[in-house]
Length: 343
Image (cartoon, rainbow, N blue to C red):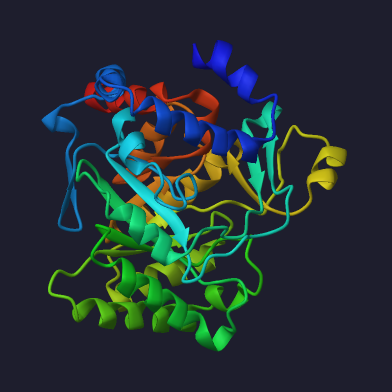
């Protein structure tokens, strides 16, 4: 029904407007008595065999919603009804910011992809906390944090620490987003020495809390083997809790979209089916080269149950979807969980 009826209608309109419209609709219909229970009965798969224990957390299933979908923690309670095992909010920055100028979100229908240059548009950490205080406790929540676009390089760490300290009581794990291609002056965040400094500062802040939270690092799918080796060394040196592989890509290799279309769109991060293999290869390289020394959350181009199984086989402990959720619909979560049970 979704792909035959709902998606064709939604895809007639601007993707960013559709996103906000969908949020409003889901918010409204979940207030109708029994609708939440109906959605749960349609999409949730409950089985102890799906549980995964990582970072000291018990995930009821290994399928999560990636950051970027619910930036401001507006809809995580409602989205949990669709059967996710965890939901990652953000990217959250200390101050609210508009992000990059519109139009900044584009569908590549023939490729089943999306190009975005949103630029960490969000309402800021205080607004996210207000929403997280409404948490019904039915799902694990990750907090994806970043810096404000106008923050000077010498204050990057301060931004991350501000978000980390403020959100600490309200999320179950943290993700340091250092790989988004859509925020200006990001070069410092790709420097190994700075990353080690950032991770250690966050870990020091974590130690001040009685209930310490897992901290993960989100990396790009465009890293070469030398850079991936540096990531493995970084994990070993800092003992960070895990890696999320991967973020969006700046590559345009292998797309069906015409050069004219791509030139019209301009720069931005590519997600969806075009980066399926790229992200899976990153996962496999990290898992094999490190001898599976750390947990990996696999994300990037999961549009089918088989895509998810491929990432798990490559070395992912958990998986996340985003663009696949948009193209394939909410049944994707159920299909993945059922496929995992059948393996």
